[in-house]
Amino acid sequence: MIWIILSAIISGILYRAGGLSKEEKSWIPVWMRHSWVRDWLCPMCVLLFFTPHSWFQLAMWLCAYGAMGGMLSTYWDWLFGKDTFWFAGLCVGLALLFLVGLGLSWWLIVARAALLGVSWGILCANTGSADVEEYFRGFVLPLTILILL
Image (tube, one colour):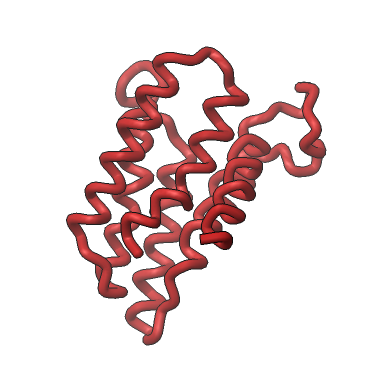
């Protein structure tokens, strides 16, 4: 449990770092303020809890990593005309469907994805603080894997 909470804190910081501009004032160093930090390091905070034991499982793990990184790179404004956090959270969660190849239950992955979508959507509809929203979105990514373990 301690590792999941620590991973959630790190993921929250990485998620916020990836959303900061270089001009914004923050305690997060400027060298961390790149979108790739969010897109490609936050998935590591989730996937480090799942160990592949074969080449097939490694391939599925890598597919989940790529899909999650890809889903973190968009808020679907190109499809909906505005950032759509409920759909973005759902898609980030669904990226872990590849982990069915590691023996995880598909319906628990879908339940976690729905929880991410609802929590991201509700929070972002009710707050105007990028700090709160981005720290939260990053924090719940690893925290919600408790559903899967």
